Amino acid sequence: MQWQSVERVANNDLTRVVALVPIIGYLILFNDQIAEIASFRIIAGVEPGAETPFFLSGIVKMRLVFFGSLLLLISNLIFKVFRPQVLELAKGDIEFAARVGERYSVHELANMETHVYSDHWEPRLPLFWKVRDEFRSKKPVVSGYRPDMRNAMFNAHGDYISYLSREWWTGEMHTFRLARFVSLILGITGILVLAIPTLDITQAVVGDVFLKLW
Image (tube, rainbow, N blue to C red; front, top):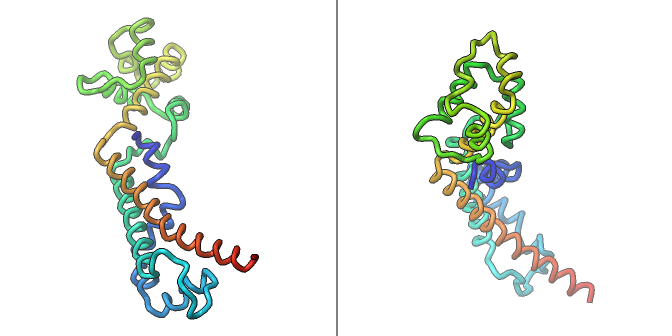
């Protein structure tokens, strides 16, 4: 249920492509001329006048494609609106800690530390709090440094800063619980809805192939 898990469903390459379908759905899915050309019976190789091999009618399959794509579009939009911006920088806490060592300033680290030490923060990475309690002061460490002392700060507290970064990143992955839940559920539902017409067409095509072989 963390944002990086939601992204795999709501913001992958397939989702971004399929999510365009509702935007042009009227022009493609519900266009009579195109629907006639792209007849499911033709795709399945069914002869004219033969009994239909499909469980679902063509219009039902088109509607499932449309509404499945619409669900994926909504899922993707919710993800885009509520996702933490840091997810664009790193897909994992260890990767983010490495980026912090390369790019983050003393001011940014102090701001991160302030959030982690605030009363409303919910601990996420037990290792960070263990390191802090056993080897560090229970007070903020980074906020006492000047910007020109960045290298000295990392030399003295490199491990602490790494764990702090990982704790903060993990906390960001748990923001907006309702948005994460809705985006994930809509994304999974959209994929399942899209799979129904695909399975119906597949069984018809496979059935026709086997009949011709035998």
